Amino acid sequence: RKGLHYLAVVWAMALLWHAPSRIYYLIGIPALIYAVDYFFGFFMRNTLIENAHFERYGENGVALHFKNPDKWGDKPKTSYVYIMCPWISKNQWHAFTMFPEPTKENHTMLCIGASGDWTKELHDKIKVPSFKSLY
Image (cartoon, rainbow, N blue to C red):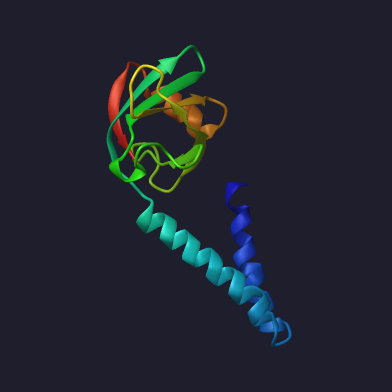
């Protein structure tokens, strides 16, 4: 089910071969904008957090605390962040809302509920408070 959205690439390629000549502009320009945005985000906004603190919250929650990366400046310019935990999956990025850490200055906190496959696996792997790396 999760991989079905990749069929859009097959659909776009089929359109390129079977549609009028102007379809290259209609598909190519948005695809180029998407690719540039993707590579900019992957190479320029990607940061390794080596010492993120994970702890369980109740029966279905995980709290994640980390020091803000230096390139964020004084405070984050966004209210959400995509994270990837290589010790769970190196191919899955998940968006979560960020909160300022209430007890530490220049730190961020994420509250993650175990609601899907990935978040349940995260909850299962965090048995005790621990420090792990993430992107």
